[in-house]
Structures are given as C-alpha cells and as structure tokens.
Length: 63
Image 1 (spheres, rainbow, N blue to C red):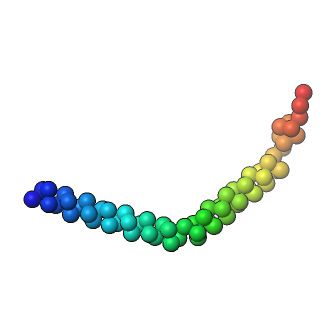
Image 2: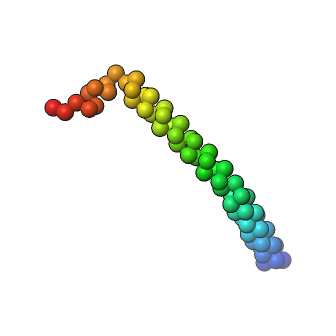
Image 3: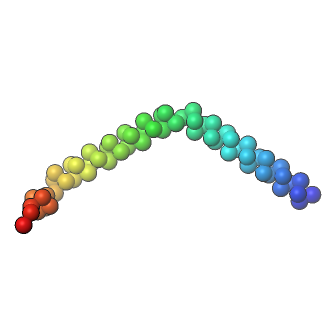
C-alpha cells in the first residue's frame, strides 16, 4: 500500500513539475523583460545614489 501511494505521489509531483516548466517556458519572455527592467531600474537608482553621494569626489581621487 505504501509503495503504491508513494508511486502515485511521485507521478503527481512529476506532473506538477512539468506543468510549472511549461508555464515557465510560456512566460519566460515576459519574465526576462521584467528582470531586465528591474536591473535597469536598480542600476539607475545606484547611479543616482552615487551622484548624490557627498563622498563621490573622494572615491575617484588618487593620491
């Protein structure tokens, strides 16, 4: 009985993973666009923080 239940759970898990993989493939282009937009936003925020930093002249100063 335990082996039969375990086998059914394994098949169910494999089916769910296949469904998730299919959804990921369908939405991968949208996901890539969202990730790129998020990275662009983070980089812009980082640049703004660097520009507004009072110590930015010290960072590029070579002694």
